[in-house]
Every structure is written in structure tokens, then in C-alpha cells.
Amino acid sequence: MSTMLGLLQAIPYEALLIQTLNGIVTGMILALIASGLTLIFGIMDVVNFAHGELFMFGAYMGVVVISATGSFWLALVLATLIVALIGAALQITTLRPLLGRDPLTTILATFGISLVMQNYALWQFGPVARKIPEPFSGQFTLFYLEYPWYRVLIAVLSAAIIGGFYLFLKYGTYGIWIRATTQDRVMAEAMGIPVSWVHTAVFGIGAGMAAASGVLFGPLVGVNHAMGLDWVLKAFIVVVVGGMGNLGGSIVASIFISLLEAYASIWVSPAQAVIVSFVVLILTLLFRPTGLFATPK
Amino acid sequence: MSKRSATVYWIGFSIILALLIVAPLVLTEFWRRFLTEILVWGLLAMSSDILIGYTGMVSFGHSAFFGLGMYGAAAALLMVRPPNLWLAILYGLVGSAGIALFVAYFSTRLRDIYFAITTLIFSQIFYVIIFTWTEVTGGENGLTFRRPALEIPGLFSVPFSSETLHWFVLAVVTASYLILRRITQSPFGMVLQSIRENEARTRAIGYAVERYKMTAVMLSGLFAGLAGVLYALQNRFAAPDFVYFLVSGETVIFNVMGGIGTLVGPIVRAGFFLLLREAFSRFFTEYYLIPVGVIFIAMVIFMPQGLLGFMRRWLNQ
Image: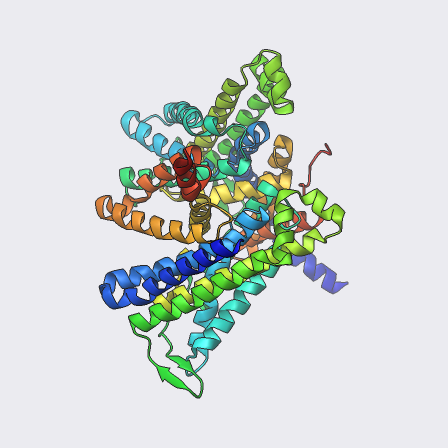
């Protein structure tokens, strides 16, 4: 009995609560990245290797706009729009010619894009990490920590973007076009939906969402040319765990995996906590190879 | 293969082999190293051709096998005194085969693009482990070691010079090529090709497709590991950079651009790519990957059959 009590007392409740908050914040950012990735896959069978680079470009655009205007919110909006346009242009020039070919060719093409974008960023901005200042610096006391409000705001904003996007998909005319194209490309085309433009728009939207998360996340870490890589790996894990092309699944999986990693980092270093998401992935592949939340076709 | 084309093939093979044997005697030190490197990357490309070209599974995780080959060799050379060449190869092969078994067990449950992504994620997992486990792997700095002597126990033992290293690598790569070529023409290789053409039908005929796929991944991983060992011997270090997925991506580039399912194509392309990279890195310094990426995208769009396929079609016109 006393050992039970000892065990219960040994649980660091405060740390758990703080990590829950941290996990939700990173989970929402990850969800924002992963939902673009899974949407792009779901609608056009494109595995977008360059997604992390779009995230990184968004963060750099944020840095540029902030240093020019000083406004974080303007930077958030402008970076999202600019990267969305870049994404649309990339889709038209490199992915549209590949439509109808093996999806594997899209991995190769987007891999090439990510090489170019990453090295372009290195060339333009140099290897030294840039910093995006937090738009405001309020904090609240959480046990022994001063927890910045900005982090909470990230989670709320990400949720708002994802929620807005969901409503758009559900009720907007163009949202219905997107869902129709996901379901049946040929039929949608026959109904007069300009499928190739829907593809371009979806790629643009996905790119914009990645860019928005880049700007939002910028203040928490340094902005550098390689920052996209960690995130794209995590986003891929989330997308596989959630079921490829399943929007709701990848959002749930994002939060689930981020929470697990946050809890794990109470006991091990954050770098080692990444192993947790790998374990989740392996278990998923073992027992539900099509993803935890896959809907049977 | 008809008797005549077989003769032509073996004559061509002998001429190229003879040229490669003579090459280090006439080349300068820089180009000698370069040629050896082409052979090593060629072996890596060839190993993944077994999966991509013959079985129709695109692996984005070959850097893991290659890297584990390097670290395996490093382990043998650092732990066993005196350092022994054959032990290094053995350790490297055991390391990469173990990893390949692990990856194969999980990833062969999935097909096509899902297989590609899973192998990619696995290679990144090993990258993270190697990168963070500093006490054992040296972390970011990797491991450096001395090159062992080239010896055959009881016969001779000479230290490696750049010529003998080249010949040694050439011998290993040639042997691997012949073995892989034999495998692809064997009944086993035929089953792999039939999996590529029609997996459902292959299963219906009664072949245990999963087992064949796993064997193919392991075989491929084994030769990729061998390439890793050779690379470690040449450069005398093992670094996490080589476990990074950039290497896997380049391996796929070698294959797709060289014409998949040809074994020779990837080697040609590896040589072409290294030359291209060398040329670009002189003009664009460290940003050479920008033009390489652009060329790569253009090739994916305009030359889906690869360089050899493109040339063949062009000649046929």
C-alpha cells in the first residue's frame, strides 16, 4: 500500500500538466502542417516532399516582412499568401505535367523542389538562424513556470485555421469542388469542375497552411534553412499513423503523438523523445498498416 | 540472350573492366579517388536497383543500409586490434543485414508509395538514433579510424595505397555486379520481376510474395551495406550525414535517371551525377544542389525512362 502511495506521489503532476499544454501547442502546429500534406496526398496522390521547405519558406517570409514593416500579423498574412502563390506556381510548373503518372514520380519531383528551395534559402539567408520576435510577451504563472500566452495563442490560431478550413471544405462551393475531386476525379471533371485548377488551388492552400505554421512557430525556435526537415518527417509519421489522405485522422494523430512526445521528454531528453513517435509508427504499421483512423474503402 | 549478343556482352564487359583496371595507373591522384568513388556509389545504386527496377519497390531508405555498413566497419576497425579488413566487411554486412531485416519486416506490409514513405521514415529513425547517441556513434562528428591493411591471411599483407584500394573496390564491385546479375536471371529474380509486373497474379500462382519481397529488401540492403563498408574504407570515417535521407534520394536519382532494371544504368548515372556535381560545385560552390535539383526535376518530367532509355528512344527515331 505504501509503495502504491509512493508511486502516486512520484508522478510529477505539475510537469505532466505543463507538458500537456506543450504537447497540445506543438500538436496543433503539427496538425496545421500535416493537414496540408494529407490533403495534397488525398486529392492528387502527390507525396509532397517539399512540404517542410514550404514551412521553412513561410518562416523566412515572416522574417523578411517583419523586418520591413515590424508587424507580426501582417507578416503572418503576407507570408501565407506569398507561399500559397509559390506553391500554386510550383504545382503548375512541376506537378501538373506529372498528373496521371505513377505517384512515385511526384516524390522524385518534390524531392528535387526541396533540394532547390533548401539551398536557395541557404544561399539567400545564410546559415545563421534568424529570429522572429514574439508579437506580445505576456505570461501567466503555471506552477513554477512563467508560461507565455503566445504559446496558447499559437494553439488557438492553428485550431482556428484548421476549423475555418474544415468549414470551407464542408460548406463552401469551392470546398465541395475539392471534396468532389478527392472522391472521383473523372466524375468531377465530367460535372464541369475544373479539376486541374482544383489541384493547383489545393496545393496552394496546403502550402499556405504550412507557411502560416512556419510564421507562428518561428518565435519558438530559430528560423534556418534546415528547420523544415524535422517537421516534414514528423508530419509524414502523423499522416501515415492517421491514415494517408484522412484529414481528421492526421489531426488527431498530430495531437496524440505530440502529447506522447511531450510526456516522454519529462524523463528523457527531447531529442530522444522523438523515438516515441517512431514506436507509435511501428506499432501502427504492425497492427493497422493502413492507419489508425483509416476508413475502409 | 542469343549466343552472339552474349559474346558481344562479354567482350564489352572485358573491355570496360580492363579500362577500369588500367585507369589508376594513368590518372592523377584526384581522378583516381574520383573513379573509386564512382564505383562505390555505383554499387549502392545497383543494390537499390534490385528493389526499384526488378521488384518495383521504390526504397527511400537505402541511406540506412549504407550508413550502417559504414558504422559496422567503423565498429570493427575501432574495437578489434589489430584492425582487420575482412572483419570490417563482416561487421558492416551484419549491421546492414540486421537493419534490413528490421526494415523489411515492417515495410513490406505496405505497397507502392506507402512502402517508399515507410522506408524513408525508418532511415530517418536510424539517422536520429545515430545522431543523438553520441557516446557510441560519435554523434554529429562521426567516427574516424585508420585503414586496415589489405591482407589475405597466410598469403600476404600490404598497406592500402590509392591504386590497390581502387583495385580492391573494383574487384568487390565487379563480383557484386556478377552476383546480382546472376540473381536477377535466376528463378528467384524472375519471381521478383513477376511481382513487379503483377503482384496479385504472382500470389495466385502460389508464390509467397511477402517472403520474396523481404528477401529482396535484405539482399538489397546487404549490397548497400557493402558499398557503405567500401566507402568507409576509402574515407576512413563514418558520419551521420551518410545515413541522412539525402543519400537515399540520390540513390533513387541514380536509378531513375540511369534507367531502372538495367544494373549498369545506375552505375553510369552515378558516374554522370558525381561528375555533374563536381562541375557544378566548382561554379556554384556550396549551392551546387540548386542546379542539380533543377536538372533533376526536368529529367523527372521530360525523361521518365532515364538517360539510357532516352538515348535509346532518340537513337531509334
